[in-house]
Length: 454
Image 1 (tube, rainbow, N blue to C red):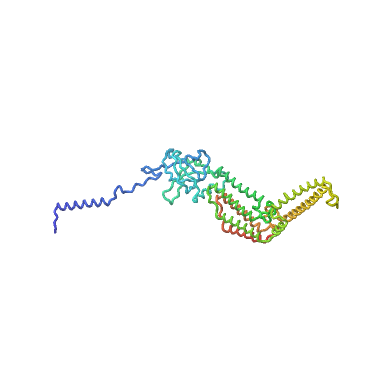
Image 2 (spheres, one colour; image 1 turned 30 degrees about the vertical axis):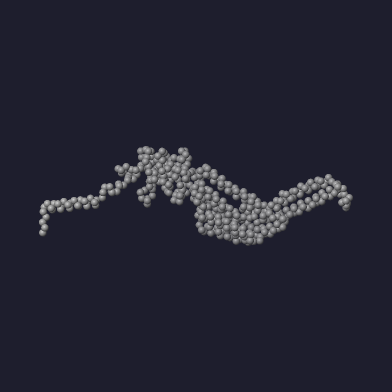
């Protein structure tokens, strides 16, 4: 057995103690690697200084032009705030706050900024897919150019699963101080939209009265203003004008140009297909209108321009010449009957020539008047009887297939207008309603093939 002296034993113990101290120092975390203390959140009673200060109340709503008018979409709303003791010189982290209108969060807005000169949080009001329902509630069914809105602020919660809640209201709890006028329509935008919409309607109506825009045009010899109205063309024009006006209205209300729905396009497609099919049916079948057209062409009338040539130029010019020739004839000495031309005096020869011209003019005038009378008799059954009568009747009276198309078009048109006005969006018609419109159009085209056009 080996004996260890006292001095040697003490040295071994000292070495072991030193090694254990070194190993303990390496295993313990250093002070420099320790995680930093969590920063205090706004409103916490932490002794550590907060990086930002929490507003305590809203003092005013500031408008872009400095006057209490209104703020609308795509404009900036400035919410002036103050601290707990009324201090306005705050250090605010604007990204921590969200905006509330009438107690509802305005989602998906760009991060606000803090304007130190006005002591206000600045929000840019934008309409997106995530917040369009709120804007619809605020701006839908407008009765005037602005709507009153109550403003509040809320802090973003620490957890993403939690929803922010309004917590900062107007000074002294009087929410009336944080109300402002939200602009629905600006005076410039509504004026421009009104000019565009009424200009479009006027253009359609003006052309409808003097041109064949909304008329059948089966007999081109009839004046455009006297031709019968076409139900298919009127329906196509109705949906075009309605969707166009709705697009303009929605654009100035929401500043969104992606408002035309797929159902609106389908409605335009159905009406366009119905109009094209109706024209094809008119071209394919041999109707009384076609027979009248051929008869008028045999009279020399290929278009209404030929009729105008007869009425405006040919008959009046010959009547004026007839009056001149008759006055001249009255000043000349008539030639005796059965007198050879060689025995006539120059004056008598002139009388004979003028007399022949008078007879010829009378024949030409009568011929043209007879042609004009025949023309008027033949086109009379094809003249317009008024808008409503033209689009709802055929030779047998009121046609149910025409009345069906008219009624469903008006009903869906009214629903369309109400939906745009109330929801600030073109309504989403179900496939059943769209199928109904398609069936009505197909029925109209099918029965139109059996119609008699006079």
